[in-house]
Length: 147
Image (cartoon, rainbow, N blue to C red; front, side, top):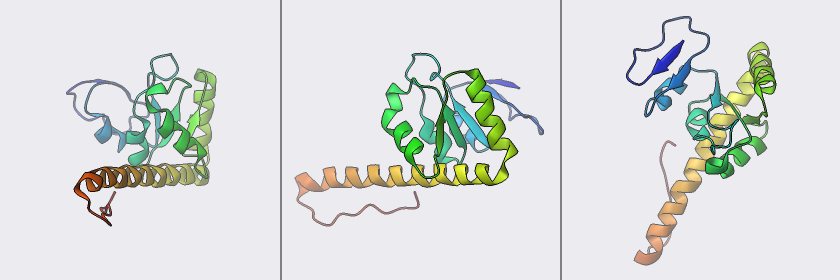
């Protein structure tokens, strides 16, 4: 199916959903097992792959991830890798097929994505706490939360 902004949820049994929308991806990622991050196979800098990872999707993206390079690197270096870099539609199809054909691999990839996204979010929150604490001369400020 294809979805533009403001549409109804995809019908039950939808295998592939192509979205051209703003502000809805976090809720849609919850419906996915594998998420391709757009604007990354062409030189546009990529979109936020952490949204998909935080929803527990196996993440796949192209080489153009300039806007989210650190996140793509962290997800790609996790063990097992939480994101896969592909260079064309053949590699993309191969990744999706491997993920959907091997439930153990797929579950490991999804868990790695979720774990890595939570770790990165906690690191950012701690960095913010450190930045706030410095000018206020607060010591021992620690970020907490459910991630």
